[in-house]
Image (tube, rainbow, N blue to C red):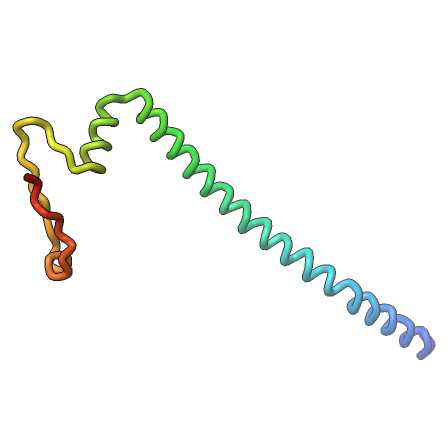
Length: 102
């Protein structure tokens, strides 16, 4: 049979262990969670970087793609083409429509 003093020593040792170790365990757990979140963010940024690199390559090498982007961005049309601008209801009321080209 164990002595009551040894039980108290074990309880005290367990208490000290819990008091000093619990904050460290929580800190490590939080760091692991943050590491996982940063890993996911890094994977997303890598995908975005690949997409941007592909677009940059296409802009440097593909004249058809360059024309497409320029036409979309600057509302340009080829000679003989008719461009229709679709205006949503809310935009017309707010005066967001562009003046017709002269």
